[in-house]
Length: 146
Image (cartoon, rainbow, N blue to C red; front, side, top):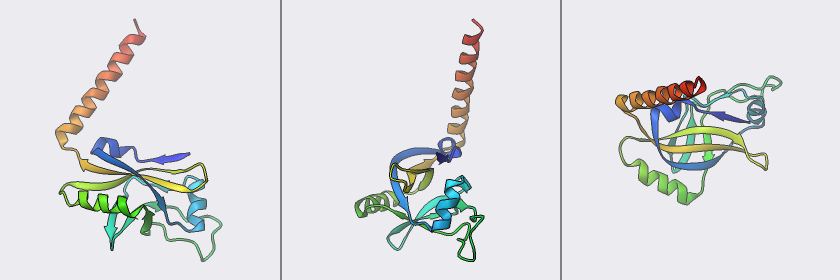
């Protein structure tokens, strides 16, 4: 089971991939297990030398009490120090951002977030992507009838 950010591939050129753990509360993990998560509008930002996921939606746990989590709080991402330094140096270039593309449970049962260092696509790049997609769809469709 994984939650994907499907719009990211259309809107950004991916440069580097990283795998990060997330600092979560128990009710957040239970909501993630129920697939009540949205990472479409989220992004990552470095604050005080640490990486945070901002605007990630995790619904409140139905059976949570007054200890339930807030829906769109900043969540700390857990990366190695060398990876953080590498990301920080690359972010000095203008036009780069960090986008989460997949949220999943690993083999040990921990929640992981696949993040990408990305650069935004121009409008003509997006049109070219759609053109290629339509062309491959037409080719597959025409092969079915011959």
